[in-house]
Length: 143
Image (cartoon, rainbow, N blue to C red; front, side, top):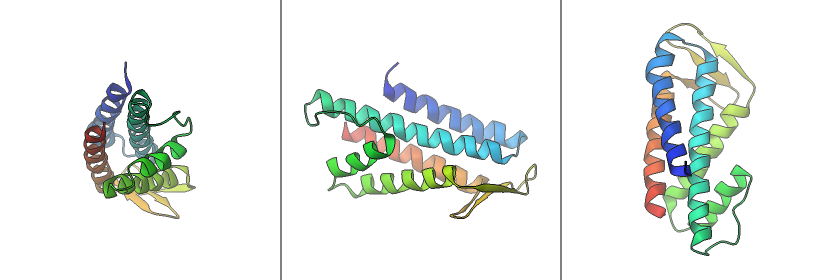
């Protein structure tokens, strides 16, 4: 199974988590799981791009640390503004995921994950999911 399949698989899991699991299980743990899957999707995609760059001898090695890989991706495609947006989005997701958090209105319609950086509700998760899909499609064009 190659990285592109992994990225697509993660997006399918995110879709299911948002539109099925979160509908019946309104908890902050599900929100964190969705954010983790979005991060994983971008990790798989960036690794896929670096493997392709390695095959084309444009880079000498693939960084093993995902954040370093994303920063290097930004350097590789420095003229592409959308890649910078992708890296910034990735960093935001990592900050949200790694931050101390608390639940607000858990088990209710407006369940929200509250961190110092941001409050993440179901509507924002849907936006993050659509943004991730858009970014994965854009990254596919870079290969």
